[in-house]
Length: 261
Image (cartoon, rainbow, N blue to C red; front, side, top):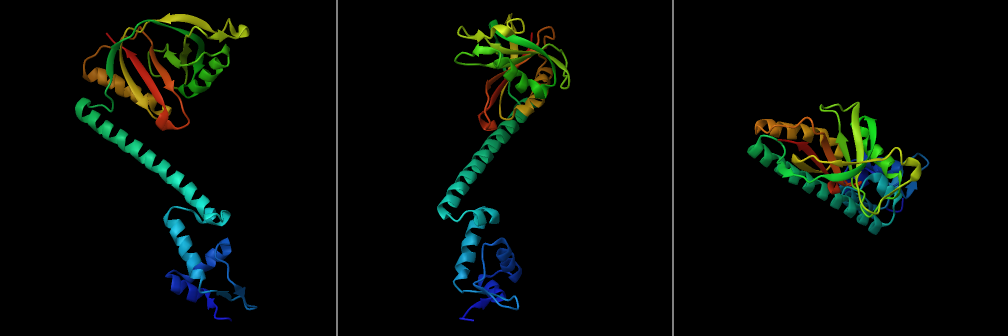
């Protein structure tokens, strides 16, 4: 057979199993040079190098499907480099948060380290909504669509008129910080209202990460106030500001504010 070797012999030279070689044939990534009438597969000795290339790629995290679909080795390396860098960034972000939470637990007995501030009154445009916390992003987009000109910076916030945690059905003023160059679409002039908001003294925490975690950090903020005997003013609504929104959670920043005495 022209010095060809069998699937079993190829597997032995490669240090793998015959089953793996046959599986790679089924996937179409190491095809036999010849198949006999009896169904025996025969390979070239140089196909050991094909196996070693696949072994190299899989150790780098390239899947067999990716190997089959892309013949361009440079392209595979570029894609895997991007993927690995993203994983490293994600792990570094997670490690940074882990260390921060551990330090906060040691110092504050909570996951967070809030700041105490006194805010000046500010104006907002807002629409009133009754709904779930998970829909706030959709409500903010709805508000944005009511403007002909959003201005250079469209910073949204949610002001919670309910004094207690109500994730399923909450009364929310979905708002945006006012800017001189903003123009409301005339057909929404009766829906979009304007008011001055004066929260005064607040305990505040900035969360960098997933917005889905905000309720957890609200509870941690309340816990911090309880542990430090800080009185919460229930007559002033809690609120949160969405400073930076991004598809990448590592680039998102949310501010939560709890009015205090």
